[in-house]
Length: 393
Image: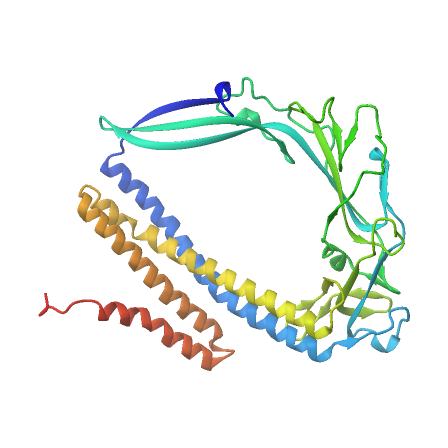
């Protein structure tokens, strides 16, 4: 990037007055209130979801029936939760006739990228003569992108115009019938097969006169080494290699926990409320499968807890922002107030988050609920212990 592909634009705005900033802060308070309320919903429902999932997994592990011979359908296991491992098999290969390509796999993905202009901007603001100046530096570079970049939104489209659409589209072909042994997989299980690997194109010929193969890409370009804006490159990847294709590599093995319905594997509804329809790559025992599910549940739980706390912190910060606006004219006081408000938001968000989590647990695990409730009081006690008494002042 450089020279004609960079330019700077400076815009000037009047510095907002006190009433304008107060009006903006009032609008922010409404957003903060909504965010604050949403945080309670996230935290409370997350605890119920976590416990329901954990109970469902414990129930599933106690009921699961192992299937050792996947080449025989045992009607004794019909409608039961079963565990099995085996090699994937599809009834027929997947094709992309446009490029003369086929593979026997569960999924075949065509990824199309176009060489396009991309705009970057860097902004900084500074005050001058009572006005706010915003200096924005725009730069342009050409890159391969899988989505069309709309150059109409560029600050300067002249000399950086992109095509409005791609001549070739990306797509994913999915096998209609997928089996492990004699069992057919449900659509939900097939959707979980996403361990894509890039397909080697070294043994394929150029499908058309205007298409050039280079490495593992097909290029719609006169010179792939020096592409121009609008040129395309196409790559392919696959997931769930079938046992009937040996030249690409060894077939993929999967482990499944689901309900047997005659010769189909379908979702299993637990009494605890969750649905078990599990698939992992590789060969795993039932205990290993449920351990992975517990770990996934734990990660999701802590992720939503963090999201709930952050929503509460932002909500409190927005609602108390009006105090900062009222003292904005006094720099020293303003900075102290800003630090104090952030500390207040942090402590209050932490306390309320822990209390909300304890309420969510209360009806399921009273002992842990009381423990977390007591833990929520600790930040308040620490804050009170650090406040000097009047006599010391």
